[in-house]
Length: 250
Image (cartoon, rainbow, N blue to C red; front, side, top):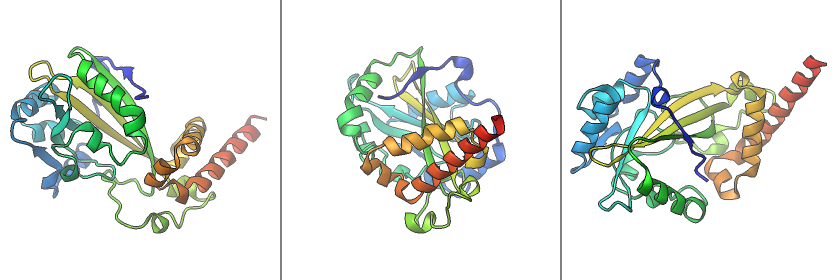
């Protein structure tokens, strides 16, 4: 399931954010902004909606969220990624996704084709312009960089992590994603807002949700998320936090 909830207009984008970090996310990365031929009108419409400007690059610097536009030649799809401003990627590159349909974009995600593709395609085909929907995604990562683009081997990346130091050496990286249709061009605007915290600053209840989520995902998805290299430390750290919480309440 996509796990979507309705989002009110007033809650669509994050109003306060670190503008310096946002600028740094684009600085030195000309590949972070792409508008394919034919997507200029949709990019301009998205920029007006987000920030009252016509340039997608300017709009993306005026908000915390990364902006991705998907368009289809026919109402029923397929929807393809035609424009994007991506300052804070989570281990993916625009050049590998641009111009590709949803199914190909999500190819690395185990189970997407079998379990989600039909529902996602139906959602994109039927989304109305006055609606905004949101969902959340999470990753356990090895640093708090806004751009998370690891190139080392996961065994090396997480080699220093133990149950005792996981609170400071593991980070929960969350994506607040929203989807809305642009009324003029019919493109779908997909936004991604990033939040990163060390485990020690995450509530015990949320740690338990993530620990259970790690255990429940498929073997293929565990491999994609490098879970075998941190799952045990994460689980034992979570249990320790729960034990401490029970002891403090006694």
